[in-house]
Image 1: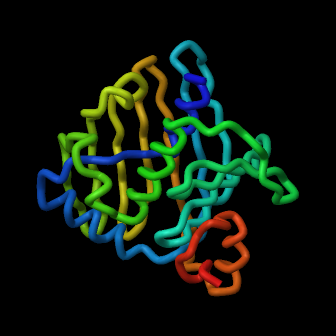
Image 2: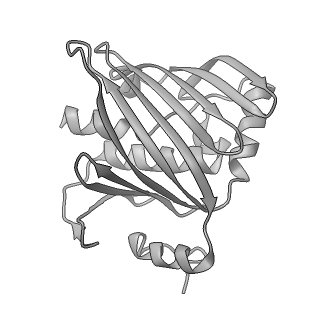
Length: 209
């Protein structure tokens, strides 16, 4: 269970207490991010292994609804994150029945809150120890205040422009994971509707029909 929670926590990314103008400005930018689709590359360096574990795939964000993350290499794994929690999917697009923990729901809600730039959801869990901007790019370094997160994560570095570009996560076990996002493009209405089936309980446009 601990390993499952930690792997999903890498997709939780970060939440923070709003302590300075830089953080507030970044969240405002993230709140304006439209529904979009892009690519990701994840590189994980374990403390006792000399080589990196790499994976790549596609991430789809439906504004205020959810995030669908599809790892395509080296193996297929698909997970959707919404306010209802985490749902796994097979290659044929069928939902996989799994037991969901409170930690899963916690991770899912906060991941969505960060992409939405929802300050209400994000207050009180991370301290910002660095917030700086270069041109339109923001970089934040975060330290956990929440005990549950602190058991697994020691720090998170977040880089973003108008959308999240890069996350570096350092764990209490001495591991680190770098997730890089690229090629984000706004979703057209037809594509967005096709992804609504990943969030069947949503009553928010375009998935409200």
